[in-house]
Length: 463
Ligand SMILES: Cc1cc2nc3c(=O)[nH]c(=O)nc-3n(C[C@H](O)[C@H](O)[C@H](O)COP(=O)(O)OP(=O)(O)OC[C@H]3O[C@@H](n4cnc5c(N)ncnc54)[C@H](O)[C@@H]3O)c2cc1C
Image (cartoon, rainbow, N blue to C red):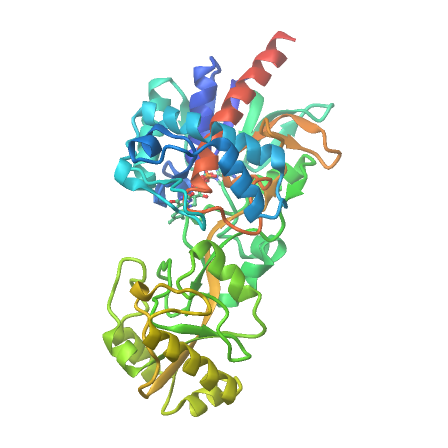
């Protein structure tokens, strides 16, 4: 029996377009189905940073020693080995070659955009010119050149299987299309509160503070469609949450250095300017609520900066203190009472911190003085609760093997079904590896899924 396409790709983000391109390059006829009215999903809105080791751009930037082995060791250690080693290994091994492939297609990654994007010192983050939108534009144009077909405003709601359980096509509102293989690249579920509650309780715990920065189409369809044909789910409660005082739905990456964070015991517990990859997790481990504490001169001097654009600005802080969102008190004693921490603990914490400010070194957490560290000594004093609540991406998803084959609960690949991007769950651990650690794997596994789907479809056709 004939089929409509060799490979059908669900989703036109970085993962889906990479898959479509690679499948077309392998000789497959390819259809991309996109639920939205435009191409690109969350990828188009993103920074497009790519986390990779051993690239030509790193070498040009003077990073001569980095390797896939070093990246693998760092990745596994950071996540205490609680990730799928074979999948992580594949990402590390393919990160540089796939990065070079992307550059070869026309995406420009300047040497000035190479930076240490995670908690390690090795610069593995690569920032593209034009951010995620430029990457999507290049991939989209390359797909068009190769005759990849695309339909928009079409939300896949069914996977079709044959009597052996092999995926042989899909359905949209009663219409069907058949294929030799399907690549699921439908993104994450950051925009779906029910799935956040089910799979990402740390995000759901932030209640109505929680919001997702990406496409409203990130509804978790990939998970649901995969599950409908028996796919296993990997990586419960994983993703990335940024810390916020919840004043508004503005993206904020880092806290300013001029405040301190205290837990319900009145103690500091971190360098407040710690990388965003770890700060949210540290806050989650604290007993009770966490408050940012600062004083009047810090508030008055608070200026807009590129990383904290919306919240930590003097006028906004004044307004939030006036409307009671921020607690304002004339003494640390009074502040402690209002934010419900023990006064002696808060005063002791501030004393110790002030002493460190005077000596010019944060003896407890090594916060850099250049981050704006300053003593907290002049009333009024302020306290405002912060929470890890801004959902950047979700890490729970379909279980895959190192060949991007979706695995069933029996650990066997589901014939004809491949997956890549945020839809998959086997890559991310408790800690985000760093900027580029989601977009990079989307391209790496998207390309691989396209190649493998094309080869599977060719095998089915000839066999
Ligand atoms: C503002 C922002 C900045 C970011 N910056 C970075 C960064 O710099 N580096 C990094 O590593 N990560 C970053 N991320 C995260 C990263 O961009 C995403 O994880 C990644 O782009 C997801 O790519 P994807 O292809 O898996 O999914 P998407 O790009 O979301 O694509 C999935 C597509 O599938 C479509 N779809 C969904 N359901 C269906 C269905 N049923 N039928 C048909 N189509 C469907 C969607 O409409 C969407 O177009 C950022 C995210 C955001 C939102």
